[in-house]
Length: 174
Image (cartoon, rainbow, N blue to C red; front, side, top):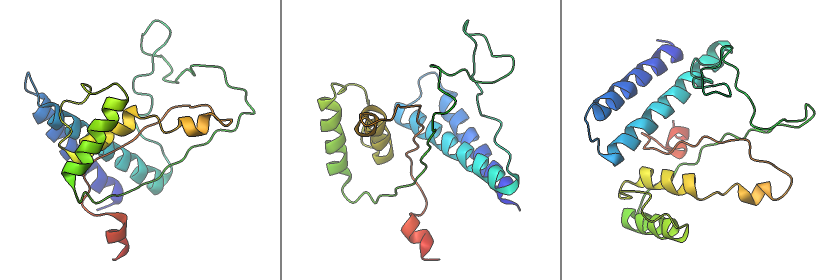
């Protein structure tokens, strides 16, 4: 089985899980977020497998691109929010940081305190899930401002946080 076929199987499983969580009228917020993050992670894995296999992108790129009236963009090309000089250097950084949650209560307490400092104490319904808590703090605690104050302008971001089977350290042992 190719990496593309394997990753589409994982994407299908993630979509099935998401559909089962979202089929109810009042899905549990922690389950809904976890299922959504799993779909995003599986979609990224699928896109990377396709890219590595044959250089093509993925079918989800610009899925919701719209024109000024909110209608689907006919050519599917996204419009930039602000004009960008053609000579502007564009940077993208992709990385992966894995963590072991050795003290879930301490981690949740940290995230709760940080969310309260940001004035968002009521933003997250349940920070008991370490991956969900990480996603909330990363989504709301703008760490990029350290960089944008020094000649960079934010052009968007996409962060995944979720449970993994093995950390990078564990994968390197093989």
